[in-house]
Length: 59
Image 1 (tube, rainbow, N blue to C red):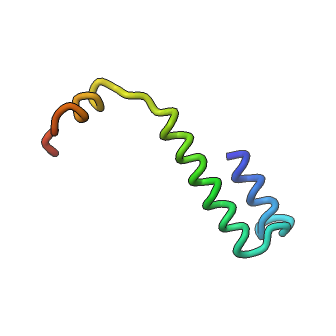
Image 2 (cartoon, rainbow, N blue to C red):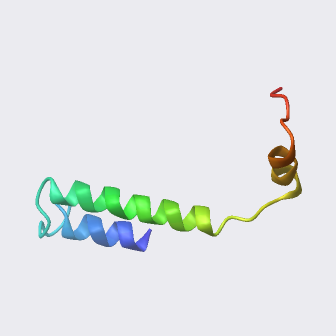
């Protein structure tokens, strides 16, 4: 949240250092980076391991 807030500050919502479309490109790039970091930090639960081993029917 701090990084997105800082990006908002330097973008068009704040000081305007990043002009359109660079503010949106930076937001997309940071979002993808944070998503990738989150996926890498995930952990495997018992339920997820069962799904990997066999196909669980959707309820």
